[in-house]
Image 1 (tube, rainbow, N blue to C red):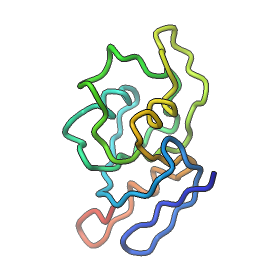
Image 2 (tube, helix red, strand yellow):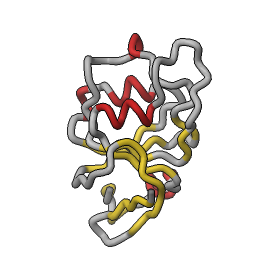
Image 3 (cartoon, one colour):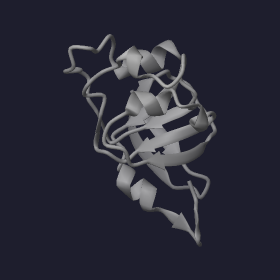
Length: 127
C-alpha cells in the first residue's frame, strides 16, 4: 500500500505503508543507531514523535520483548529506508510490522532517510 510523508514545507516523500494504516500529525526526529530499534520504539522519551531511522535496514532481527525499554511503544510513527520482512534472530517473537500493527502505530518504508535527516530550514531542523 502506498504511503506518503508530507512535511510542513510541502515536501512529499512516497513510500510503502507499514504497521497501522492511519494518518498522524507528528514532530519528526531522527535516530542514527545501527541496532536497538525495539528499544527506540519503547523508549518513553520518543512519546508522540515519529522517528526516522537513518540506518538503512530495520527489522532484520525481529522483536525480542526482553529488549524493550518499557511495556509498550511510545512513538507515533516509524520512518525507515528498508524494512526486513523476515527476522533472522532465534529470539524473535514477531516481526516489526506485526508489532506496529498490534499497537496501532503507522510507519512508512522506502524513504530516503538520510536525505530527510539532512533537510534544514534556516538554522533549525524543519522535520
